[in-house]
Length: 412
Image 1 (tube, rainbow, N blue to C red):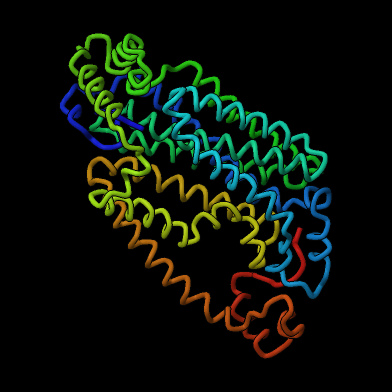
Image 2: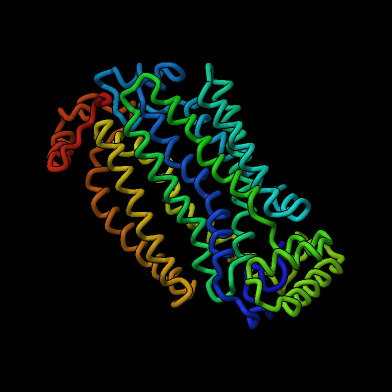
């Protein structure tokens, strides 16, 4: 739980000197680099599941479906075990996030990032050397714990260290590194897709961002707020002086942080009980509704399964991976734009602009999708229409032909 001026919201400490120093920039870059591991996994898992050597070793049933001329690509990936490969990480991440907040308060933000990095490192090594499904899913579970721990600790760390005036820009650094991880993973997938051992390299290279983040976290100090919460006032003073500059008088800010920490410690009620009080109900509703509806837009599915989705509409294997790279680059560019405007125009402006843009794009997509959807039948539908031989199949091929889309077996 963040306290004082380093918290997630600008508090009374905002009036203190919050200039940008080389130390705070380096510290925040190192901390934000933990986004690499999450971004790398987002990009790598979807691409690996399109690699034929990977599917041949672990999911041969998927390849058997793909070899059937009558099979619709949309249904090729209908495999519960394959779904478990991807979803096991996110289930483990969910479980880790439930305990990560207490862990972050108990051992500190930096130590939680180190723990997450080491766990992710172990999971990546197991995945790279996996010999069976059990090893593959166990490695994914470890990756999930690593992601859950770092995703909890890093944004709090950045909020507590960043100068209040530039807190939004520094916080988007985490998202920026996620974007870099996604693009890097997609490029690696593209380069290794045709190698028989390519999937091992793609999964195993996750140790690189994990090592970068873990070593970097070991070289930075914990946040002043975290140190004060654990009674390490002298270390907090040293950490605060380091990020604010040696010539800066930090005593007043340190006193304010101690006061805020004392107030938090004196609170007798459990925080998970307090948030259900009437006065906090609007905040609770919005904190649940915003991420909930963001998930329902489907953007995470597009991010996780981009190559698979592109293949399902007829892209070849290479084309699907290139399309995923383009998607990642667009996302990365949008993050750079938001970094530059978030502190100038505010979070609300970006929230409204992003929501309107997504709404317009969803409407445009639906207007193009539903004419095609009318001609689509499920895997158990009529064979002629699935093969494009019926009247609706001809309409479908007519609509898709300008984009060189096809419905048929997996392309190489």
